[in-house]
Image 1 (cartoon, rainbow, N blue to C red):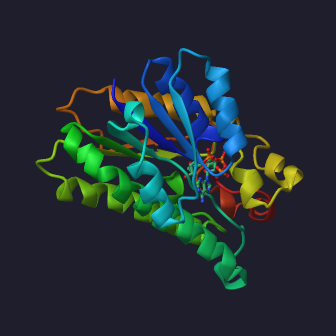
Image 2 (tube, rainbow, N blue to C red):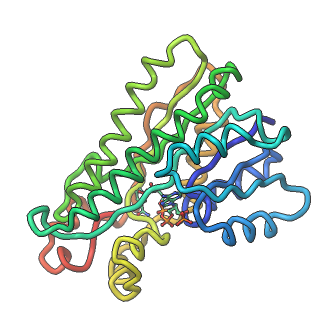
Length: 257
Ligand SMILES: NC(=O)c1ccc[n+]([C@@H]2O[C@H](COP(=O)([O-])OP(=O)(O)OC[C@H]3O[C@@H](n4cnc5c(N)ncnc54)[C@H](OP(=O)(O)O)[C@@H]3O)[C@@H](O)[C@H]2O)c1
């Protein structure tokens, strides 16, 4: 099996995807900033798994290019990129927002994803059957109060996924986009800058998705025969209402994802 690069592998969806793909015997490059988390993931998977921890900040395009351009031989044949690393910052009306939060989201969700695609594309194209799975969000599709810039960065991911399909025509490289709804990961904790109470309140009255639900969708996309391109999968918790952020108390305590 050829190598999969999974970004945002130190937590949430990314860690669950790494576990699944590695369990199938696939070599997996697990990329994120927190090296100790990646090492633990590799150790947990056991000696039969081939997981390469790669501590890189995806906002640094040169570092991403260098890291993915100098992979050890047994991981160098990259055929799958799961472009998952991302974050949200802040949760209020745009007019009250901190521009640094915008910068963090644009640098990570937009530029970071682009840096990873650029670095992986030569190998994906050379493989003749490459596959990019971008993680978008339902926030790209359905607005909620407080989701403004985060949703816009994810709309970028959705549109880029479609545009890439046209650019890559004839290369055999497939592009999929998965749009999750509310899932229990560290996402809310990051959004609320470590405020655990606020992050927990997000899930009041809703049974959120588990990271494994998204990992299963990623695995399914990748497992399709080469003639099949899954353009987009949208997944929400059964109990998640649309427009959650528009509820009264919700605007200060919750977001839809
Ligand atoms: N959870 C949800 O409700 C939800 C819903 C829809 C979409 N999403 C999207 O799903 C993706 C994964 O989020 P999650 O829910 O699994 O959240 P999470 O548990 O917070 O995981 C985010 C991952 O991204 C990595 N990351 C963030 N900034 C990075 C950077 N500059 N360089 C490298 N890695 C970076 C983090 O690792 P380090 O901090 O170690 O770098 C972490 O591994 C994100 O794109 C998010 O927008 C989440």
